[in-house]
Length: 169
Image (cartoon, rainbow, N blue to C red; front, side):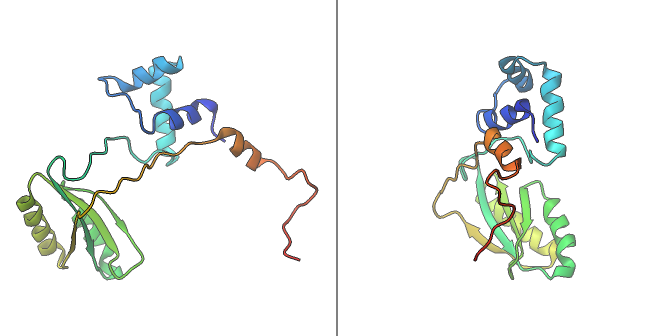
């Protein structure tokens, strides 16, 4: 179970992370704790994989060009190819999907020409072609979500209705 402090960090700073030279100090001051407390908590949340990354999200194509890319890679080659793809600084993440096109990634570059050149280089190094999916329409999904400590605590309790299992009869 997460402490109130950890829950507050997760809830309050998913979206409104301070843009200051010392953001963890700003968070600490707002919560009445030390900067070291915040840094330690953030590290523990990261170690527990409750925080994946802390960073900005920039609208696609506002600063250069970006493209969603898919590749069909034999399972035996997937780790090797994913490693090559990840080695390009223009790739900000890649992930496996259960599909013929099983490796997906987003590529960003300062110009469309550099983007195409990088994709050509990825294809050459990997030995597989890419399916290039340029942005047609921008669609924003808010990925923040509110964690409810009280609800989480209720889910941890035993049922109080005398039932210990569900029945379909």
